[in-house]
Each structure stands twice: as C-alpha cells, then as structure tokens.
Image (cartoon, rainbow over all chains, first blue to last red; front, side, top):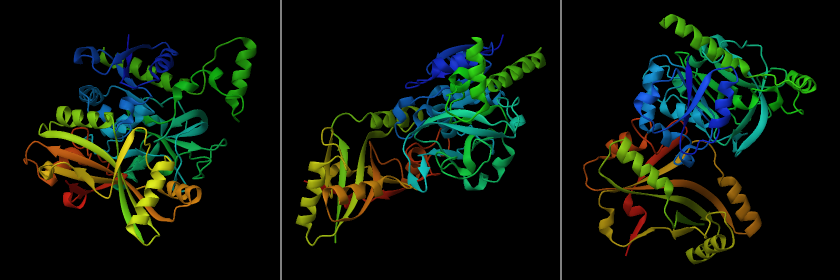
Amino acid sequence: MSKVAIIQFPGSNCEYETAKFVESCNIEADIIRWNCSSKEFHRYSAYVLPGGFSYQDRVRAGVMATKLPIMKELELAAAENKPVLGICNGCQILAEAGLVPNLGGENKIEMALAPNMSNDKPKGFICDWVYVKIKNPENCVFTSMFTSEDILPIQVNHGEGNFIIEESKKELISQLTMIQYCDKDGNIVPSNNVNPNGSFQNIAGLGSKQGNILAIMPHPERAIFSSQIPGWIDSKWVSHKNHSFSNGDVTLGPWKKMIQSLSYFLENSKVLQT
Amino acid sequence: MIKLRLFSFLTYVDLECISAKEAIIQQLKVESLDSIKKYNMFEIQLDVETRKVAEDYLNKIIGSSYYLLNSNKESYYINNIELKHKEYLDNTFFVKVNKLIANDEQKILGNIKNKLHVPIARLNKSIVWELKFKNNDLSKEEITNKIINTTNRNEGLLVNPLFERFSFLESNSIYNAA
C-alpha cells in the first residue's frame, strides 16, 4: 500500500493535522524527521512538507531548510515523479529550493514568497478565511479531481505569502496549475479584500511544470472536514457543515478532493508499476 | 540636515548567524568562513543644524522607544561599527541587503515623528552582514555566487534576488578602529 511521508523540520507545527488530512481518505501517513536516512526516506510514495516555521524563518522563510541533505533526497524523489506537496512553510521551502515551478527543469529559483503587501505597504502576518479557484486543475496530481469552477474556502496564515515570479517566467506559468484568490462568487480581482497578500495574479498556489509538485500557501488541511468551516463565511460548505452536525456525521470538506486526487494518482501509478 | 547611521545588533548569541554560518560551511561548502555577524542599519536624516543635536535626538529615540531597537536585548553603534583592531578587517566583507518591496520604514518614521516629536526627515533600513574569512581565497564575485545570491539550493543564501538587492560596503566607510 502506498504511504505518504510528512516531513517534520525543526520548527514545523502542522505535521499532525497534515497527517490527519492525508489519512482522511484512507492513505497511510507517517511523520518522518528531517534527518532520517536516505533508505527510510525513499520508502514513501509521496511527500508533504507541512506548515510552521522551519529554523524560526532565519535569514528568510524556508531557506535554511532547503540547505539540508534531505532536500537532495526530495529532489531525487521529485525527479522520479513522486508527488510532493508543500503547504505554507512547506510552500516557501519548495520555492527556495527551486522545485516549483521549475519551468527550466534545473531546480533554479524562479519564484519567491515575499512579505505580505497591501497597496504597496507592508501588511504583516495575516490569519483569515479566503476563497480560491484552481486554474488548470488537470495538470497536477493534487488537483486533478477539482474543476476550474470550484470556489473553495480555505484558511491563510502567514507573513510571507506574496508570490513573486521571475520576469521571464511570468507568461509561462499560465500553463501550470494555479490556485488563485477569488471573491465568494469566484471573481479573481486584484482587490486587497480578495488578494490578501499582494501576490502576482492572485496566486495562492502553483504547480510544477512536471505536475507532480504543488506549493500552496493557504492550509488545505484546515478545510478537510466540513466541521472545520466557520459558520460566518458565505459558502455552500457552511450548509454542508450544518447538515452534517444535524445528522451527527463527520463529512469531508472542500479540500477532500486534494487527497482523493493524490489517492487516484498513487493507485494508478501502482497499476502502471505492476 | 544631518545624516546619521545606527547599527543595532543582538547582545546575546544571534541564532540567525549561527544557522547561516552552519549552512554556509556545511551545506554550501565554504569552509573558509570564520564568522558571521548581522546588523540592522538605519540611515537617518534629521532636520537639525549640528551633529551633536542630531545624536541627542537619536539617543532620545533609542532611550524612550523600541522603534529602532530593543535595548533589553540589542546594543548599537552610531555612525561606525567599533572594532578593537584594524586587522580585524582583513578578509572581512560587509554586505548591505535591501528589500525591493516596501518595508516598515515609513511606519517607523511616522511613529518617531508623531509620538516622540523628533524632527526626522528620512529613514532607510537595511541589513548588513559582516562576513569574516580565514584567508583571502575568495573574491567578491565568488562570495556573491557561493554565499549571497541564491539561485538554487546549492548556491547562495543571504539574498533572494527576486525581492532583495545587495551591495558590498567599503569596510573603511563603516568601521572605526580604536
């Protein structure tokens, strides 16, 4: 059976809820440490870099973790087309490692997560619920079961989530899977109320050219069960939540499709291997 | 108009420097790095007539607020970094890093002006990394490529060129040897 590794870095703080996120769709997940052996590391079929503050965000968010030997192993796993998901600090690590978007195929840094901005002023740390849509969901193993019409509530929780794309790559990213901040009706507008950190093209997450890696700043693991959705947001998922409470059910939430997409990929890649 | 510089630094162990040094030596394989220090550098322009008055105002800001530094855990030099020996500057490089996007300078300036009533006209904030090497094996270009400018996970650490820029400071412009 395929197993997913949640990589715990010094300073990670979302690894346990990320493991629950993966396990919610009956995929086994282990939390492994940043200094595990190469042999142990390569036992897994997919990898998730969870949120937190690896190395206290020293120098820049995520950059210290990219220098660890385990990142060489992650590069090798990614080159073997194994799925890799980075959430929040994990997203920052993937950006600083050059694994996303990797349009040039050489793991060079092509995007950065800069401090949050609003009207060209620093905005500081944000913690809120926002809405996103997914462009080209079919191009990434983590989003293949979504549609580009889905309007998904999700929590943001970061100080440096402002996607900056290298000038020469700005046009090329349109072909990639792109998760974009939108309003409750799905409109992708550059307003500060919609784009919480000033990201280029409202980007909240970006897939790799190869489609097996996704870096996302908001936290899908905090919207896997409908019970996690707050009652005050304007979303159909609130009525799902209320319905599940009245029935006493634990129902899956808006981001279940992310793990279902991964599960589908892992099942099919297993078939291909056998 | 008088211009002053303030270099603030942590008085206890700076974990950021320890991590940076570890990564540069162990992972980026620059074994000749001897030490690394980090300063916040504020370039301040005050609307006063004399340097003495300007320094009095700067001491007022430091003594009665945390806008520029936290005196419980940070110390500072005004205008120049004080060194015990001029020889310390041998094989030492100072790298100034600025963000290409706005930082909190305007907010700090507004607070100083409005809450402390200091006639401050401009304020620029940078980070200055002091890199000291055991020998002179590395040129500025090699230091740029190996330690400073981050292009992939094996090269560079201190600057992300997508939203930061850097420059080397001439050491004789910022030190004051005893």
